[in-house]
Length: 257
Length: 350
Ligand SMILES: Nc1ncnc2c1ncn2[C@@H]1O[C@H](COP(=O)(O)OP(=O)(O)O)[C@@H](O)[C@H]1O
Ligand SMILES: [Mg+2]
Image (cartoon, each protein chain N blue to C red):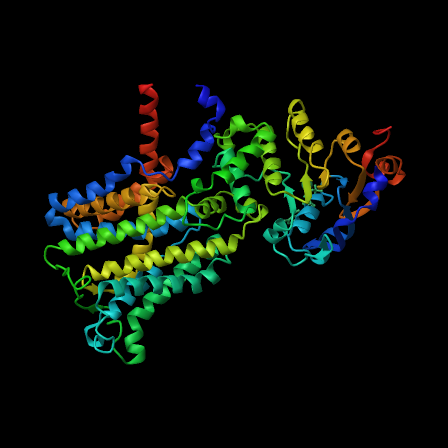
């Protein structure tokens, strides 16, 4: 399985990616490759720069140096929206939703943008029932259909996390960056989210940032460890689990036997 | 029943979204009221005409403030530019040069609309790159700049263009060559403003109910998320800004046409502040908030000045108080209160 993935072509690549916030270096010459169909985890202590790395890849933040490639194209200077249009999609560590709108409206905004009808201003929303139906279909996939008419603010945090994922799927990603998708979700509910992630279409290249090592080792075929903005190690779960440096910096003794 | 099983009903949430644009009977209310006012209060027609025009102006402000969440204190820049565009075209001295079409009302409103849109495009292109306080200051600065320009350009250029403080007086030609403006009973003037408001309102209503309108609300609700769903946020904001400025320019043009003159007041900061207050009073991002806000504001102003006089300006105390109360206790405006009351009544009935 790993061999197949490793031989896949690189979908996403960063070369020498750098970012400073003033004197603080949050990304130090990060070289990173995400292969087609990959199930790749990015781990590292809090403040290591994982979220910043995602922001640099998606263009939410401008890099101080280095390049980002998507499917072989240099996208370093492509706008955030332009990268989404090319299939580079992310979820947020902290829910970033249209809080004053209903769950269905949240999905509608993503679907209509992805379908390229969002700039139309002469016909009502209702003149395209297909777009609304597609939004509803995505909600059903994540078992959110009963919450469709509720405002985001009325949903428990765990269900809001599912909306984050539904929105990402609405954009039909080729590369999906999941920033701690189960963060803040009670463990009783987190399995819904993890099931949704396990059930993602195979052809999507997935990078997941996750603190729960059980989840990481179950899901990931490859792991990259980021410490203080630099890549400490990349390898299979076994390699990472037995890497002495990683264990001392990050995992702590005897965490993953 | 069997049929219902064959073709499953879309869920209520879906239906709600699909039907949101449909006209409801209550939406006739403001228009019936406007028609009634014409006949019931003939002595207040100038005020009523002004209310209609200001509603259109308020709608343009609501489009960017209430829907897209772009807060501005400078929308008189576009209102005033539309006003001066129409007034300049109607200047008696220029009529021959302008092939005698300058004083045609429809030419004037077309010019006002285009002038507002053009200024919106140029200024918006710069202003919308900034956020929050900077954006607010830039909109203000533009208004002050144009105000000074309109006031002093005659002295600077040695010609008589804007008439400085005194402004320009003119006489409009009949609408379509048929309906003469009426400076005494304001009847044509009123229906003219009414017609323009109907058209302007339908345009705004269509836009806010469209997919484009939905993206504006998305930008207001969470701009980071809009970027992350692949929305060209900057372009959308510029688009709605230009549309809003065009409508503001249209309102400005009608404002001066129905009154046969333009004065520097159309560029004044007071008006920019007042129109924002009207929208907030009525309820932002809800179309009819503009109607209620303008109406309540204008009536309150008129009442206060009639009852308490203009010296000292009690009116400013009243409007200040009303604004504080709204912001603190009814952030969704008077219309929001109305919505709450009607849901409550609806629940009781059930
Ligand atoms: N916008 C910002 N400005 C300044 N410092 C930031 C900003 N965003 C993140 N940081 C800092 O960068 C470091 C990395 O943050 P982050 O990428 O969120 O780490 P992680 O996701 O790995 O926990 C932290 O020290 C954080 O305080
Ligand atoms: Mg993080």
